[in-house]
Image (tube, rainbow, N blue to C red; front, side, top):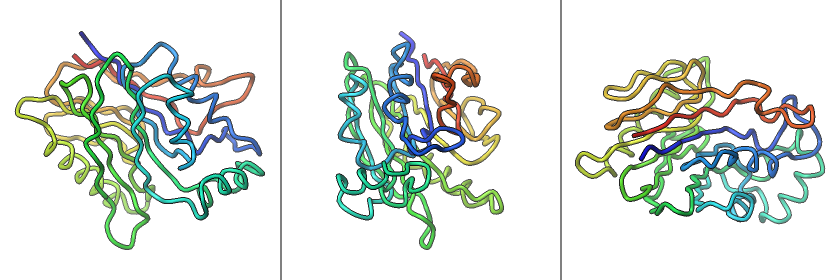
Length: 232
């Protein structure tokens, strides 16, 4: 049986361009449409991790990359006063792996992938359905120095592969902030900076959502498009 793996950088719940209110709940609802087996999310406010299971109806495992400035309820309230302005400065930043409830989900932990002196970035991994490792990352946005996110992607790859059992497939998903990463043994990347790469199992080509698919009531959700592949 193949598994649909989807990945989306949700831009802290912002529209594109940002507005005062958050659209994060609408984004999660849209992201689970079509019942993906695995959903990797990046650029979540830290407070949202406690709500993802309720919003999605899926197993949810989260990893905080940057803690909120103040306790989560206060940071969430203050950020909502102007979502487009405050963004992650107050509410922190997190990633999450969501898995359909009819599949098992084993949290395999997280590892820092950013170098000292660079904003903290992590790779978070889970074993899905007892048969593949899915790793979720959001690399540093530094287009002037592409070697920075490239090194973080390599650390994420090494972390994920070290967790895999012999012969177990590995899925590396997220916002790599790198175009065209070529990892030995992995499937082809997408045209952009958001990727779902697969090693050790058949995979379809990456599908990128068209703009209209992430537009709700005339509002374009996030400055990134979801990307997805079928594995197996």
